[in-house]
Image (cartoon, rainbow, N blue to C red; front, side, top):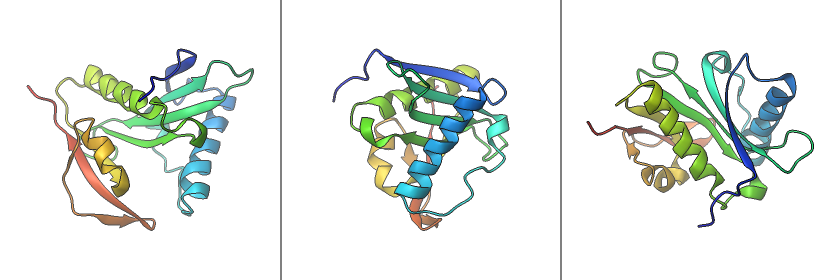
Length: 160
């Protein structure tokens, strides 16, 4: 699998640190992937963005901010008992280039830096089960329907 190009810039931000243009690009990408591509009408803006950390992968070649991939980390007690990683997306034109894997690696690394030895819970689309298993997550629920898409809960437990 190819490595993400060195011109991809991975940047962590709190909600308040995001510029209006960055937030617009993130919300636009989330709508593009989760609502339009996946043909899923749901409430994306769920009130958790202001209490999350946001990791964005920006195209270093673009004159204006161009989001390539994104995720958010929600701290314990806001969604699950454990910290969670969600809203993971990679834009269609960079899928398969390793950007999403690097994004998740950085998301896990950040979470464990903030909360050493924490377990991380995710709600994963069922078709991505193997991808998340390769990152150390284990299925913890039966498949369930979330907005018309089969999902499973998965947990990554840090070895002590």
